[in-house]
Length: 162
Picture 1 (cartoon, rainbow, N blue to C red):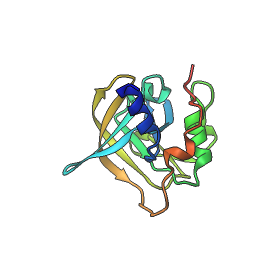
Picture 2 (picture 1 turned 90 degrees about the horizontal axis):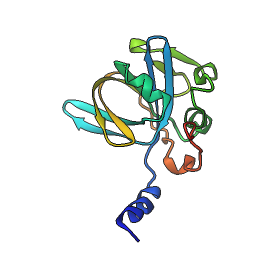
Picture 3 (picture 1 turned 90 degrees about the vertical axis):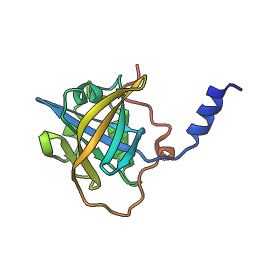
């Protein structure tokens, strides 16, 4: 077994939190389910989200000054299916959910009350994904409800699959 296949086996068993990232630029809105995200600084506070370069959200995010990072709960499986299993190139996801414009017009999902908006400080090419380094600019209320973990949606086919 190669180091790469051992690595794949290890990370496929992790149960890290999932996020829904939304973006707005001009008259375009987009959002997607994200499995790669992490706090990466305390003072000053920083968070990094990585977006697939195949994703429409990535295209919109490249022109956006802010991104919203939503923290879906374990009960938000349908929201995860919409933002993870449907591509915005074929269907307007925002017509299916209640949302409101946040800072810079970034969509804030009404059904996801744990969120923050971050100002994009820089972008980092990491291969098939690009990392967006965010500085928090606004945030919703924090609640203790369990987050939606990867293992609950691991078999969800991606909306941006060819």
